Structure formats: C-alpha cells, structure tokens
Image 1 (cartoon, rainbow, N blue to C red):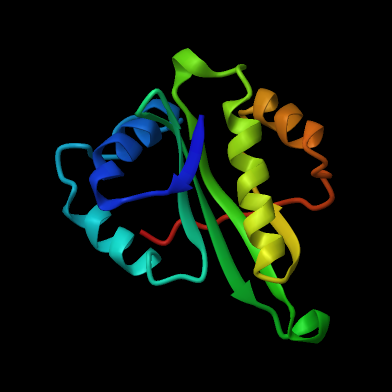
Image 2: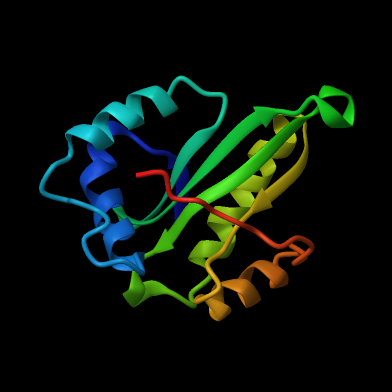
Length: 147
C-alpha cells in the first residue's frame, strides 16, 4: 500500500469513494466533476493535503488534512481531518489506519499542536476506529447547513 498526495487524475475515484460513504443520497455528483476539480486546485495550494491510499495501483481510500492557524494557543497551527473514506469492500484491513497515520505525521511535520475531526453520530464504527487511534470524544460538535 502507498499513501500519497492526491493527483487531479484521482478526482473521479475520490468522488466515487465519497458517494460510497455518504449518508445522504445524491450529496455527491460523480457526473459533474467540475466543482471538484476547482476545489482540488485550491486545496493543492496547501498547507494541508488531500491524501489517497493506493493498493495495487488502485486508489481505495482518501482523506483531507486541513491546516489553519488559531489566535489562541499562542497562534498555533491546528489540523482537521475530514472526508475519510475507504472503499466498502476493503474496510477492516488497516487501510484507514495507515492513511490516518500519514495524515497525523504530516500534521506533526507542519508543527500543528492539535488534530481534530468530527464524525457523524450515525457512524459508531467510525467512532470506535478514531478512538482506537487515540482520539478522544472530548467535545460536542455542531453544524449548521447554510444552503
């Protein structure tokens, strides 16, 4: 298995992985990759990363590492991990753990003092996965959809 920065050629596969993992039917639109390409180009400017897990030359996992600066904690850098998806046929084989380990190492290398993530309440298996990696369920998360 190889963990590497995503390339523009990976977008179609990444969107398919998002669609596989979505709790909301139709949230992702693999038939219109234009918005994903525009977002990819912006994200590629850094400092975060889109990472993919590749097995036998096939992209089977993805996650996004977002890095931002806080004013608190002496202006420290914080990272957030989002959009963690592994192909449903390959879950439970350690791919997600290796993908997350790479994202965490990148966050450390960038000098982040903390990594945070959210996980939908409907995903108890994901919660156990994150806890096994050392994440603590320390805060209650809230979201407000603006569209």
